[in-house]
Length: 180
Image: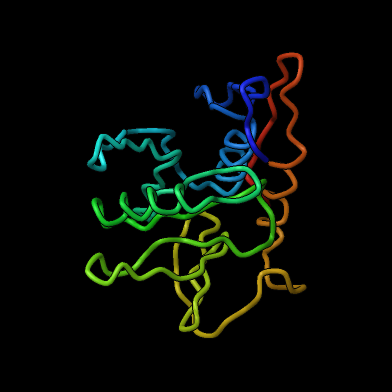
């Protein structure tokens, strides 16, 4: 989805934050439903060459950034996220679109090697699963596709549903409870 001069995301107030878009607010609802603590745009960074970056979310329980974009990240956005990772050494979860049971890439690894690998809402690579759900970040052996039946907990499915069904029109404030 390209932005034009005439079409802009709608700023949205939720949970005491003024989000730049409804999409960011939906991710905040997802995090809240699972009890995942977050800070919205806590700090901006100078990346060098007069380039600045203000990451969308800091997830303090897992020491990880999360950046939200429309349907997909372009090369410039990925490059900026990689520069932030190299400067802070904290992984950056690249969340495209609304919360769903799909794979999400992250930039993570050794700053010296600039290693990147796949992540889901929970982070999957060839060696282990990293699950970011229900207030925890933990590893388990094997590889499980999050799109397969039985691979997501009911609370995660409920959180996805809450985030995507949230309405903000006419001053509505979504009621969010822990997804059980």
